[in-house]
Length: 58
Image (cartoon, rainbow, N blue to C red; front, side, top):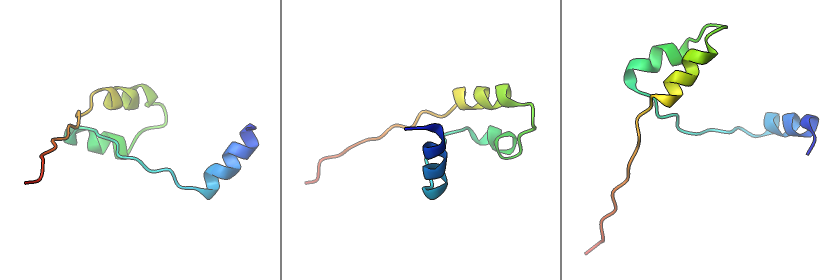
């Protein structure tokens, strides 16, 4: 797939996923500065680790 095809398809489809960041980092995540890529990477690295518990139905 070429880059142009990828970008065209990306505009057609919306990719959404949960970003598990800590509540203390929400403001920095929602309002990043133009030169704060390193800070955003640190926020992604310092994330909450979700876990799931399964129970058998009776």
